[in-house]
Image (cartoon, protein in one colour):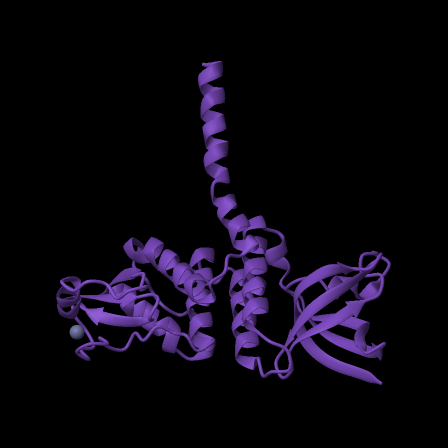
Length: 274
Ligand SMILES: [Zn+2]
């Protein structure tokens, strides 16, 4: 019996001598592990549609209780991402997050849509790569049900003060007055407090990313002075709630250090020759 479905390849790994096992994210059935015969060999015509962040149409056949790829063809290609190391690394990290938060035999249509919209934005260069990554991280928290409550102060219910404070671990906000009062009290036992300071423009963007329509979650304007904190806060918020580190993210961070090393080398060379 043959099965036909569309899905996004989140990862591929060796299986036996020359086969590959893919993790494919589908809308209706969540993650599906599928095997690809001779996936490591370039002779396999379907292989090019079976690599990470390909959104492809699969035809699989059941063999020994496992689905094997009979045919695969790419239905949405993100070719521009593959031309750039930073974009590729960002896309791999995004797939890694999706692999972590999605499960098998479950409706993952919302998460699949989020990942596809994010990859599309990276591929078409719709915004800065870091903004896209940060918005994806915060939106993932919202889709997975651990969005921060960015509506009002969790103590007095006020929607706004000059600065609001987000308690990352509890995912709730406090206004500056309640925060001042709280500061005078000792910390709850076993409660590590990680606080993000949210000025109005930063809070507005975080609210937008969490609560906007799925197709428009990247349509925000953030003044430059808040960008670095937006990147840091979104990443930290997600990782704190997933309680996990990702090698793909470590690699992405290591790339950031590269231009600095390069320019330092050039400086040394210039000094040496001068
Ligand atoms: Zn308050």
